[in-house]
Length: 226
Image (cartoon, rainbow, N blue to C red; front, side, top):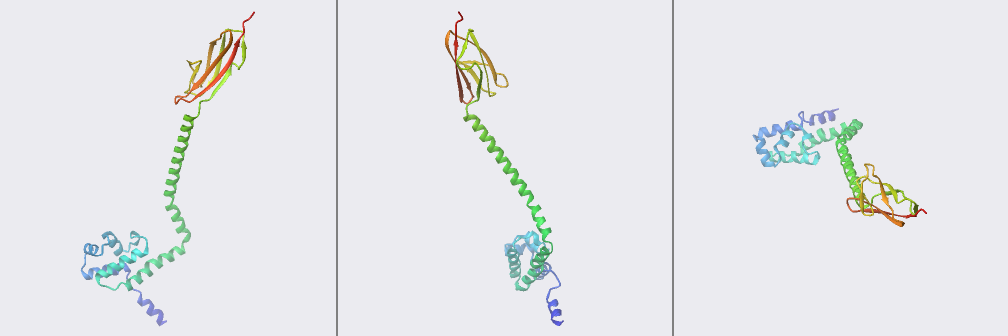
């Protein structure tokens, strides 16, 4: 019973922060002077004396170093104060976290949520840019699509003209035997070509603005009707 009583009396009645402030005031040292001598930021000293340990660097080793430098400058042995700090702040905080592990985990998860959202947003932007760039490069390097619907290769005609009909991509220029023709908004075209008696070679060219071409050739025979 006496052992417990003595142990209880060994614990200071005041928190570590209040004891530090009292020691500084007794020595007549201002916060400004303390900051200059210890090289500790004044805002950290104020937080230390107000027990606002969450405003100090999170690592316990830095907080203990602040207390040690603080007391050393006042000419006071730091060990008893450090033991009280460890018991009051470090051990107590650890016990509280052990009591509410799920709450602590939930808080950490939500605190990381903004970073996660930012990472996903950046990833999506980069992915979109890469896909868009790939599409543009593919569009430049690949020749245009050209589909001829008529005439069939080797077609024999008894008429002096024939209709060349087909389709290509929008924005592509089309020429027949080096003569440009018009296409509609859907990339479809239709042009009447005069034929000479005998074998006629019809060359249809679809060309992108970057110079890539697709060329189709049709051979049509015009036969004279007897």
